[in-house]
Length: 186
Ligand code: AP5
Ligand code: MG
Image (cartoon, rainbow, N blue to C red; front, side, top):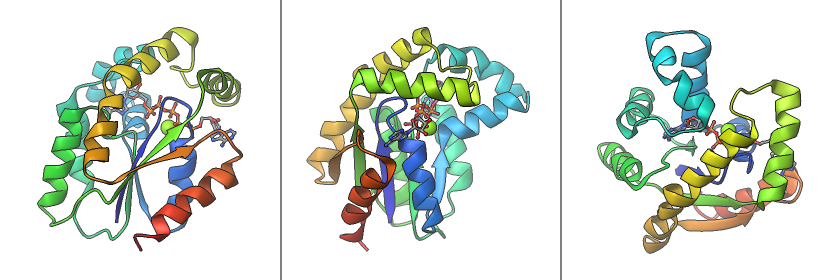
């Protein structure tokens, strides 16, 4: 099955996707892929570094190509973390999956209030030093989430695959809620 994880910055997408990976899901995070390019100082990494640090979205074509390179249709369970983020990306993902006779089975949206997002991000900056975990970047990331990614709610709701889950409780509480929803499809 194909699971899309939606949620604002620091809502717990990566945390929950890793737990699904422990259960055998292929975890595809465009943020992790882009940071790996940046840290390896590849040509692509240099081109996207400024956008990444500023919390701006990189191009739809670029992230879709990163996903396309990793999808073969042979994986039974895939979790998409941070992709799609725009309606254009969602349509591209639909086409990619359709080429394997697959579809998005469930889109899980994690909801967390802004105050808690900021405190999680501050804590993560102290632990990991992620270069986009700063107030200016957070503001832009929240803005692009509100303006672009929130359009995916009606997109997936119309298809009956959107599930909203409270991302505020402890990690294991959120993961059991997700497991309960996914279990209905497996
Ligand atoms: P991306 O890496 O996807 O960043 P993001 O969406 O801002 O989300 P984060 O990774 O910051 O948070 P998360 O939701 O994964 O939370 P996490 O589990 O880490 O994207 C980065 C950038 O790349 C974008 O700004 C853009 O420039 C570019 N990009 C990526 N994808 C793109 C796309 N599709 N199109 C265009 N551009 C793209 O948790 C956060 C912290 O909270 C952690 O420390 C964690 O331990 C803690 N935590 C998690 N859950 C809980 C909990 N339940 N209780 C307490 N603490 C918790
Ligand atoms: Mg993440």
